[in-house]
Amino acid sequence: MKTLACTKDGDIEGLVNQNLPIPVPDGDEILIKVHATAITQIDNKPNLSSTWAHRLYAQLLGLSKPKNPIPGMVVAGEVVSKGPSSSRFEIGDCVFGICSASINDARTGSYPEYVILTENCVIALKPDNLSFAESAAMPYGGILAIQLINRAPIEAGDRVLIYGADGSIGAILIQLAKNAGAHVTSVCSGDQVEPFYNLGSDVVISLSSANAELLIESYKYFFDADQSGESSSIKVKFMHAISNKGKYIAPEKLSQREGQKSLQTLKRWAEMGIVKPVINQVYTEQQLANAYRYIASTKPIGTVIIRFSPSY
Image 1 (spheres, rainbow, N blue to C red):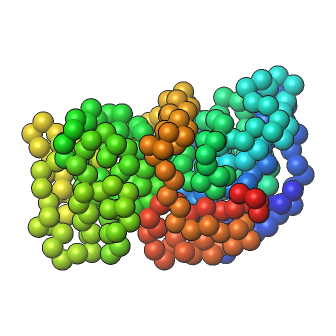
Image 2: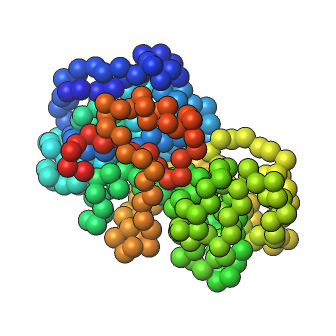
């Protein structure tokens, strides 16, 4: 099978095609033919990340090291084989979720044509109403967005701030907060504000705007969806705008069980139309380096997808 591997730490040009044998599942493992994956914050520099997002998912997946020669965290595809003790999924099931990634195990990471996961990984049947590409846009941001929204007992009319609304977490969090009845203010880094209004934001503040500080109000909940791990003077001012009974909420460590539960919730809400995937761009696996260059040159609204199959 073909796979993409990183031969130079943090180097886009170090992404190369490699041929590996198709792995054979054993025990409770399942073999998935990958139809689509997503470039997450963990993958945004090949094989290199020290952000909170990496640490969070490393803890979620039980990883001890951040580096992996075969990158890729998200998977959407079809179960094509399974081990003798596997009972949770059947051959032909279409699944989506988080792909375990180990530095020494070439069967993991979601950039090969086939990946092997154990049944207890954070994976579920994909939403019936979503394509593989749409499904791949959901797990990374969706799991974290659900964790954030679950820690805020939002009441109708509550004013909430989503800082770092760009990206996969913010795109889903806006929808969840609006569905809960909140008045949503989204803070983005670029000049494009219309997409955030389309997702349900009531107010959009661009950090590139000269009058951004003039738009700061008082907020009951401050959702920190910013994945850069960086602070700034204006972010501090937003934090000072949290009301006396308000709350600052940032992602925390997730157990594998919590991740699985959130993924099932995400599937159900997607099928109900409560939350929709937000895809920024779709690239083929041959265009992966171009996808990384695109992300490096801009801050995408939503998720960048890598498509492995024509029928996605």
